[in-house]
Image 1 (tube, rainbow, N blue to C red):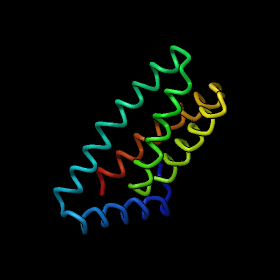
Image 2 (spheres, helix red, strand yellow):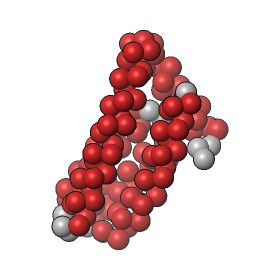
Image 3 (tube, rainbow, N blue to C red):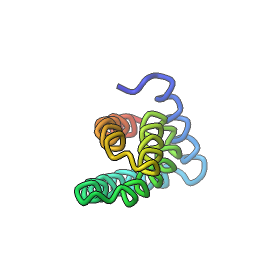
Image 4 (tube, rainbow, N blue to C red):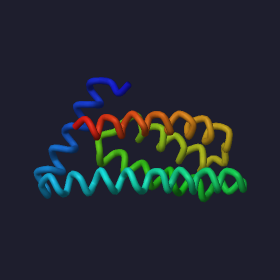
Amino acid sequence: MIEATEHARIDGALAQFLDLGGAEFVTEMIDLLNQQTPQQFEAIEKALATGDIIAAQRHAHSMKSSFGNFGATTCQELATRMDRAGKDGDAVAYRADFELLKPAFVQLQAALNAG
């Protein structure tokens, strides 16, 4: 469950998107996140399966910004930790945070759909 303060940040980010481009822009941004994140998760799975921690790290780095744009601090923090672990070559820590990110992203999706 997303905490109230983070939910407020997510709502604030959605309000900024609304101000920038209207309701259609908000929908486009959410759709883009919902499309790209699972693709990145799949690419991470493949990279980890082949031991390519550098490729996995690049995906985590990219996700940090995406989650930050939505005010999703839990997902952003996990992606930041994954990015750091990838740079350090720590596949164990990377995998642990990735396993936490998956359900956190599901919670983010629910919050975005409720918003």
